[in-house]
Length: 164
Ligand SMILES: [Zn+2]
Image (tube, rainbow, N blue to C red; front, top):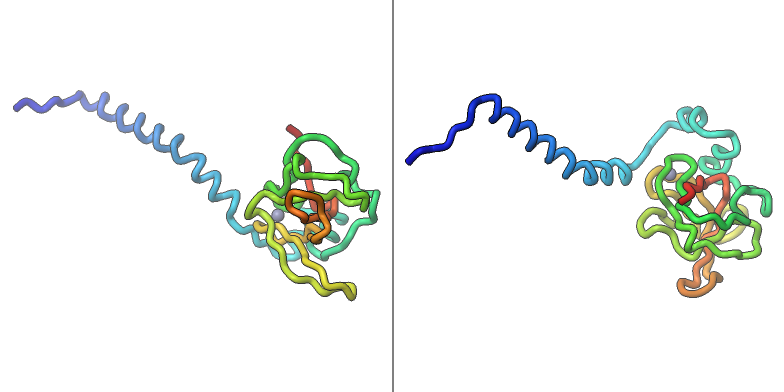
């Protein structure tokens, strides 16, 4: 039986083509991994990276004044990302006018935010943080509209809208 053999340069270019194909096939997977990877920076690094307002809210759990942030009255379509690390957190379709003066959503992008009990300021609340970098985003309450009944009450300083 005769085995087909290719000249060496042709073999090399085939191998290179296969490698190229693999790279493009796996690129979305690699991209997905890098996005969900936890981001841990030192306090000093956060201070350098973020604006003073963003640092105060995201890293020191501050709250911005109502009706003062840039997104409470924003109706533009897009994805709201974490202002500290760029992770996609909320969709404009899930935003609603809560009347509180803070940007409010009925749900986050599934798995992209974490909630935990918070008893600061003499109140029992549920804090909402970015799943990737643990930055403080705001709080979630059970007095939201349908379909979830949740009100994710956030600080504009924690968000960065990527317009569609
Ligand atoms: Zn983040």
